[in-house]
Structure formats: C-alpha cells, structure tokens
Amino acid sequence: MKEDPRLIATRQTALDAAQKILMADGVLHVTHGAVSKVTGISRSTLYRHWPDARSLRDAAFRCIATPPNIPPKTDGPLRSDLHWLLSVLMGALNDTPWGQIAPQVVAAASTDAEARLVIAEFMKDRFASVEAVFSAAIDRGEITADVPVEQLIELAIAAPYFRKLIRHATLDAGWLDQHVNLICNLAKCEPRS
Amino acid sequence: MKEDPRLIATRQTALDAAQKILMADGVLHVTHGAVSKVTGISRSTLYRHWPDARSLRDAAFRCIATPPNIPPKTDGPLRSDLHWLLSVLMGALNDTPWGQIAPQVVAAASTDAEARLVIAEFMKDRFASVEAVFSAAIDRGEITADVPVEQLIELAIAAPYFRKLIRHATLDAGWLDQHVNLICNLAKCEPRS
DNA sequence: CCCCCTATAGAACACATTGTTGCGTAACAG
DNA sequence: CTGTTACGCAACAATGTGTTCTATAGGGGG
Image (cartoon, rainbow over all chains, first blue to last red; front, side):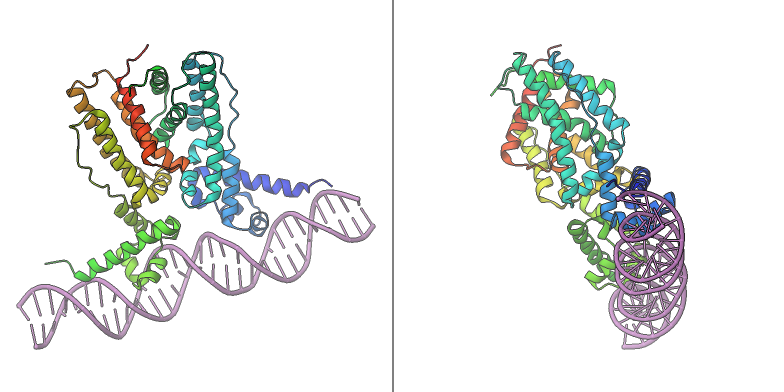
C-alpha cells in the first residue's frame, strides 16, 4: 500500500514554501495562511497536515537544519585537518540556509525543548567531527594526550558561531587562518600551571 | 513643569509586567492585551504609550538588556584579572534577566537592525573590559605585545555565550577555571609558525 | 482653593490570524 | 468500477491588533 501521491505533493510544496518564508521573513511569518497564499493549497488542508502553527514551523526548521554530511579527513597534519573541517563549518554558516535560520533556532531553544533537541543533535555531529581530528593527531603523536581536547573542540566551534550569530562579523578565509593557528598553538603548547 | 506622575507610574508598571511576560513566556506573548490583563491598565492607555506591539517589545528588551556595570580590575596577574572579569560575565548570563532573554535578542538581530544595535553596543562594552585586562598585562610585561589579543578576547567571551545560548550547557566555577587556564596559556605560549 | 489640562478607563469598532468543522468533489487504490 | 481518502471551500469562534469616542478622575498652575 503506497502512500497517496497527493499527500506527498502537498507536503513537498508546502514545506518548500514554508522554508522560503522562514528564511525571507523570519519564523513569525511562517503561518498556515501565508503558505496557503503562496502555494494555493487550501488552509484547511494545511491544518490537516500540520495541526497547529508550531508543528508547521518545526517541520520547516527540521527540513533546513538537516546537517550537511562532512566527509572525514584525519590524515594530514592537525593544522591541515582542522583548517579543512572548520572551513566546511564556516561555509555552511555563510552559504547554506542553516546559517540564516540558526539564530531563530537558537532563540526557539530558549523556550522550546524540540528546538533544543535539534541544536543538540546538530552540535553533537559537529563536535564528533572535530574530536576525530584531535584523536587522530594524538594517535599520530602530533600532540600529547593530556591537552584539554574537550575545551579545544568547544573553542574551535564556538568562535565561528559567536562571530556569525552574535557579533554578526564576517567569516572569511583570513579569519579562519588566524583561528586555526590559535587553536593549533594551544593544542601544542605546554600547560604552565 | 514636571512630568505627570501618572505617566511615570503607568510606564513603570507596564514595563515591569512586560519584562516578566517576556522572560516567562517569550517575546510572542508580550502584547498590549496581556500586559493589560496583568496590570489592570487599560489597553487603550497602553496603546497611547506604545503605539504598536513592536515598540512595546522593544521597550521591554531595552529595559532588560541594560548592561551591568563592570568595575575594572586590571592590577593583579592576568589570570586573576581574567578570572574575575569572566566570572562577572558568567554570573550575568546565569543569574540576570539578560541571560534569559539574550537568545531572543540574538534571534531578533537576524532580521532586525534595532536588535543588532542592542547586541553590538552590549558586546562593545564586554570587549573593552577584556581588552583593558590584556593591555594591562602587556604594560606589566606579563605577556608580549605580539599575542593576538583581538582573537583571545573573542575566544574568552565566545565560549561562555556559546555554552549558554547554543549548547545550553552549565556555566559553573569548575568550567570557568579551565577556561581561564586555557586562555592564559594561549596568551603566554610562543607561537610556532 | 478652584479651574483647566490631560491621563486613564471603558466600550465599540474593523481587521487579520489562528484553529475547527462540515460538506461536496475529485483523485487514488484495489 | 467502487470504496476510500485527500482536497477545496465556506462558515464559524476566539484571540490579537489597532483605532476612535466619551466620560471620569487626578494633578498642576493661578
């Protein structure tokens, strides 16, 4: 028993429109009425698919927040691996829908457990990627095992997000170079009590 | 000609209620009707003070976002100064209204220039505080002048905000110790090309 | 102390958004 | 071909938004 093609078509059309509205006008404007106006789909039909405004917004969020796959690279020197990985993250923030809606997900997360989950899973993947890079460096003996990897991962990821979401500063190649330098130095310098 | 005390009283009462609603239920629920219901102030009166929903919400935001004054301390060792300063910032994020509404300001900033301004000014103060600490350390000769101060400031501040707003992780004394250690190490370790 | 000014309360109004319901129609599946 | 199901449409209530009018109560200047 295959799924009714009408269901699929409606869902697809509506979600496409919802995403466009989300990115263009913000979460507040993602509404059954607005999607109906854009797509021509009846409002009651939309309500049948997404019973309330929240579920509609959540659906739009989830569509966009799907993380891009990050092909692993843990073979080169630490600096090289980190640079490549962070450039991917930076690119996602700069050039994908995720970068545009992330602030709104962050805000939603302050009152909404669902949004917190979206972020938590998203970040879990990011942390795992960076962690793999550091682990490989330790295995190679490039850095010692006693460096505070957890903290370095956090700093590595926090900086681009902070610049993008909070400071609204640019994320360009020049900044990335400096950032990677700093993290690498930190990973390789001896802790002084 | 003094200002009518009724104006002042109304504004005060309404803004207090608006702030409570903002923190408890989110920006969406800050509405003339809601404030009216809580305070007993007539809806028409509220509209006379704040002509539309946006101005009411902005007013509530601005009330809360007023930064706490940070008394400067730049006399001790770098580690001590930094620890003290960041503990103040951390405390603000943990225990003041600002920590609760910051996510919503961040989200608003993605589509609203007004909110971007609020954040920019807020961060400008924070950066200046940290910068003063580093400058003093350089003057004392505790660190060399060639450390990338700009980046260190950003890392120092980015980490607590990232943890609080995005990861929703705890900001406790133990974490702060580690964080300060890391930043200090970074400030004092020799760059390796 | 009194009068004028003005802020407030209250009600009525138009309008948009949110969400529900019932019904006729059209499309899909077996 | 027939039963099921999704769709569009219209009507509906409830809430939020914003305006306008009038009556009243409170404060300040003379």
